[in-house]
Image (cartoon, rainbow over all chains, first blue to last red; front, side, top):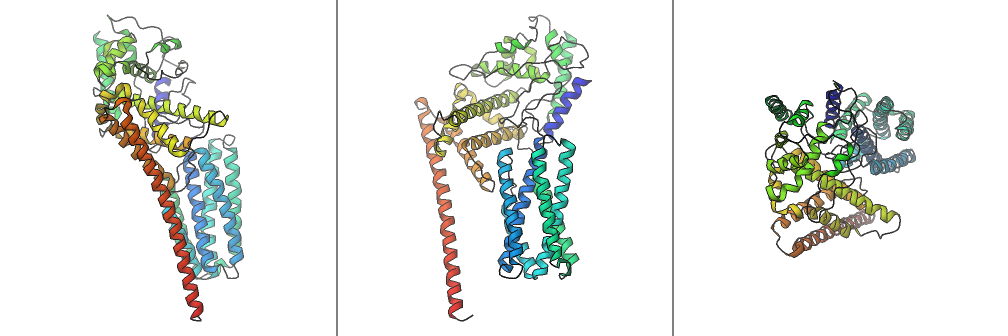
Length: 220
Length: 311
């Protein structure tokens, strides 16, 4: 019966949320009144809050981590020949992070609790890979940027499946950033990443780490 | 009469079983509409008024100095595709429960957070007192409903204030004053019910209710910080909310024990806690900048030594 189905649908929508949040105001199925039962904030009308929350949280964490990786690489290789290249990529990541900081405030998304951890882990990864030499640093860049591009592509697919019109601005941002990350990936390859010591092992390990980081940051 | 009571019992049982599954929702899951229909058919009671949207403007607001219920909850439009059982402006289970609980609040100072209060509330709406059977006997839903309503009121109050500041009609408050005022405004909503509030607190701490009550608490604290202008996107986000939660909870407990006129002891306690928090954050940033300066000094010393030693 439609009436029984409608409340069940609403129930499951609320259950999809992470526990700490109250549901926002939702248009009730059948176009009825939206009851604020346990909500204390006005959700931006009509957006799929859980999905957007995750997307922004994990992207913010990703850009934050990327920043720290480049910072680590610069700490070791800052004065070498690849210093300017890394610096330029780092500057772009800083812009990305700034943008996600703004989006995070605009959508009232909570940051991942693991940020201090990504702070240290990113720096250690960047510095560690740079200690393997220029090529090691480039290999790390290639691995991370490839992971991130794939991850952005997944998000673009998700948003387009949801509603390309509603999320137009967010889609534009993510597409732009995906193109930037792809460019970094290509720069890494140009700088002989593939001839780095233990390239395939390094790449696999780093990409596994990225997958784990993405999984955790979406949820915690 | 038997069919109605049987329907209610069945609905209540489904309520018990369904409750565990619901995490974020404050109310029992929507059940078959028979339960509310049964309520209305209960004999020997007043024929329930037609569920026109205007009817919900008649519920009483809580007593004594309490802000009256803000705008009504909006038109209760019909669900399409019903079994054609009821009239066009049929309201949902949730909306009915919402109305009953709101009406019940008036009776809480007298009866406590109990089924009696809910029964009295249902009576004022022209429903059978058996409506109290829709809810738990410990008054969980009533309390959660009340907390939810208070949080909504606080949210609207903060939003109004923000609008005034944006229009330039009011000064932007400094953070400590803003937090003090927000917490005080929220705690003042408890004053009409203060006698029975300790009972409510203990019910909110029941394991069954903790997910919902925690949810409500965290969204309220997040709201206050949002309107205070918090734009942190790092771990500070968590620190600030944890600190404010601590301030709120301790002040609430102090308020329970406070017998001073106008709760002035409580507000003084609150002001001190907020001041402490500000000091703590100032100290933290001072420590950080001192730490950074020390590190720079050490680096400089190391460079000097290495240069001197010709390394």
